[in-house]
Amino acid sequence: MDSSGSAIKIENVWKVFGNTSPEALDAIQNQKISKTEALEKYNSVIGVSDVSFDVKQGEIFCVMGLSGSGKSTLVRHINRLLEPTSGKILINGQDVMTLDRDNLQELRNKKIGMVFQNFALMPHRSVVDNIAMPLEIRGISKNDRLDAANKILEVVELQGWGNKFAHELSGGMQQRVGLARALAADPEFLLMDEPFSALDPLIRRQLQSEFIKLSKQMKKTTVFITHDLDEAVRVGHRIAIMRDGKVIQVGTPEEIVVSPADNYVADFVKGISRLKVVQAKSIMQSIESFENKNGKLSSDLKRVDEHDLLNKLIETSASKDKPILVHNSNSETIGVISQSDLLKAVIEGNDGE
Image 1 (cartoon, one colour):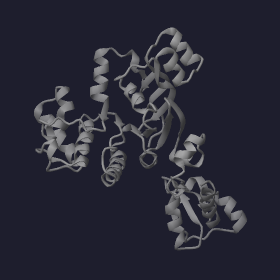
Image 2 (cartoon, one colour):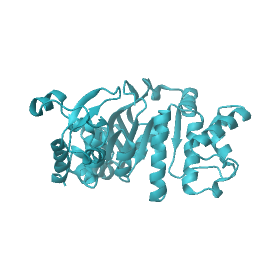
Image 3 (cartoon, helix red, strand yellow):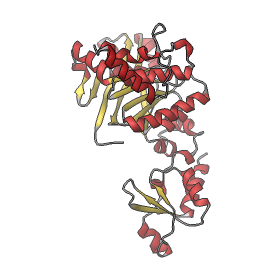
Image 4 (cartoon, one colour):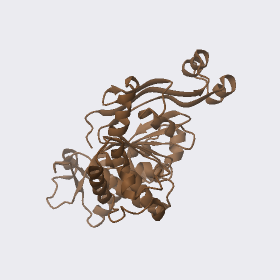
């Protein structure tokens, strides 16, 4: 993932439904009254409350929260399906609130693809025609858009299904079509609103795996909405946890599981094993430090990537009672993990449960 810059930046975004009079907004934004008070006193509903975060180029950024937390309301501000009450939404440095109708339409049609929970396929159109629809809207010729749609069919492993109709496909296959349609116009950004939540657990996990694999190939900047922390941990490079319209914590899966911001987040992460989130780079020590205590390292040690997770490290070390070398993406050795480092990482996780 390229983390060199912010592709999407959300700055102090508020969304208030109902009464947005100056008096109501002053009480909500400046006096910080609660959601209940806002509703009872002003008939105002706080959907999103002073949210700020950035999404890096090529990142999968998960926004996780329970029903009513504001996550789906928030994502609809990115392409201005909803207008914020106040705040800024920047895409590649451009404030989307300043776009006129034509430029906004171009942003939606060419730069942003959306995938919804309910598939939203056209029942009277074939699979390939559903996928080609965004290109049709852009005025691409029939031959060119069908060529593009058929190529995307292969990417989502639906080759041979192009002439079928939605009712002939399983739920998992329909969602693949929804994803293919979002990718057909080759957008720079993907907005995914609980895309797999309507599927049974087995199909859901399979599609998560396929999406992770696809993301590594296509490197789309993605905002992924979910109510499932397991899914967020599995799919996301970073996660924002929302509650009552506010962002409570933003961090990597490891940061959120190991260092929850408050009791609300801590309750969420109780069921997430550290084995699935703690990375080699977090528990390694320097070569110099290790050799000062234990003498020179031997040359026949096993090697792991700095991003390998604790469960893989334990598996790697199980066959040999020796330290493990850690390397980076350039295959340079950057640290070492001893047996005691591994044991400490596991024990710390058990102590926190």
